[in-house]
Length: 480
Image (tube, rainbow, N blue to C red; front, side, top):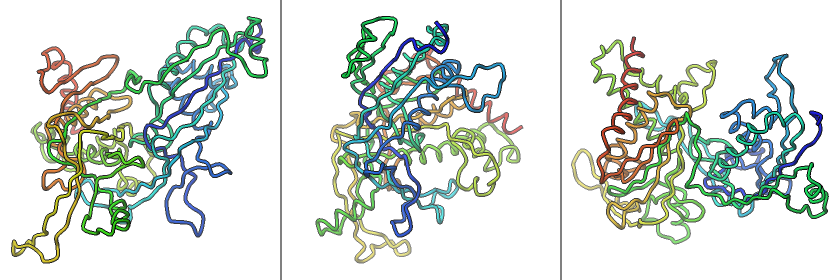
C-alpha cells in the first residue's frame, strides 16, 4: 500500500459535558457594551460554542505528552519543526465545532491579592463571562489512517486508547484551566473503525445513513476514573467542615435583597447557576499560593539559614516557579518571559450534607470595646449537618512535578487536613477550616491513600517523607 493511500477511517462521536465553568472568550465588549473584560465566544446565531481548533490543540497536547511521535502521526508535523530529516505529515484529524446546549452564562469576578499584606491590589479587579457547568454538546471527530501509519500501528493504537480514556475520565480546555475552569468529559462515546480492506466497511461508509463499522464500540464516561500523566503529582481529598464556611457572593446577596426586599443579609455562600454551593478554583488557588509562601518561609527559618541567605521574598521565587508569576512580578519585570502556572486546582462543588443558616453579629468599636449603633449585620454561611461526614472534595496538584514540588503539595494537604489553612471569608471568627477524611495521592504510577481513622503504614510514610526531604534540600540549595 502506498503511503498516501487511505486505509481506514476512525469516527468518534459523543456528548461533551462541562463539569466546571468554561472560559473561551472573544475578548472585551464593543464600545457601548458593558465593561466585562472577557465575553463568551458565540457563533453568528448567538449560541456559545467550542471551536474545533481549541479541541485539536488540547487533544494534541494529551497525545504528545505521552508520545511526541504519535502526536505527529495523528495531528501532523508541528509548525516549529525545522528538521530536514523529519517527514512532514498532514494532520489526520478533523474536529468539528461543538455547539453548546443548556448553556447558562455566568459572570465571575476576582481581585489580585497582595501576597505580603493579604489585601486586594488596587486597580486589579476584573470581571468575565463564562459558560456554567452542565452545558453539553455533540463532539465529532474523524481520523484518516493512511499507508504511512501502518508501520506505527501498534504505537498509534496505544496513543488513541490513552486519548479515549482521557476523554472519558475528564480533561481541560479553554482558559484558566489551572484555576478550576474548563473541566469536561465525554459521555456516550461511540467509536467506529472503518477498515477499507473490508467490503462490508466500505459499503457501511458509503451508505447515506453511515452505518456502523464492523469494529464498533461504545463507552460511558466515568469522571471517577481520571487518567493522569505519570509526572503529575495529584491529590484528590475528601474533607468535612470543621465549623462553617462562606465564600462570599456579593452580587447574589444584592440580587436576593432586591427580589425579597430583605436587605439585612450582607453576604451569602457562592453558588453556581444550578444553586449548588461552590468553592471557586480561583479562591482555592489563592489560598494555597499564600500558604505555600508561608510554608517555604517557615522551613527556611527552621533550616537555621542566616537571614541574608534566606531573606523575605526568596520563598516567592520558588512559589512562582510552580504557580507562575504574580501580577506584581509581571509589572516589575514586564520583559521577562511569561511562565504558565503548573499548579492546578478544581472548582469544588458541595452538593449535600450542608445547610445554610443566618448568623447576626454586631460591629465592635475598637476604641471603646462597645457595639456600634445601627451596625448589626447578618451573613449566611453553610454548616455541616452530620459531623465529620465528607462533604467537599478538593482536587489539586502540580503538572510535571519535581520531587520538591511534591513535598510542598504534601505539606499543603497536611495543613488543610489539620485545619491550619482556612478557605473563604470570615477566617478571624473560625470559618473555613476543614477536617481531612480521605485522600488519594498519585505520582509516577504510584498511589498512596490516607484515612483519618487509620495510621499510614511505615513504608508509605517513608516514601512520602522523601518528597518533604527533597523540599528542605531545595530550600537550602536556593539559599546558596
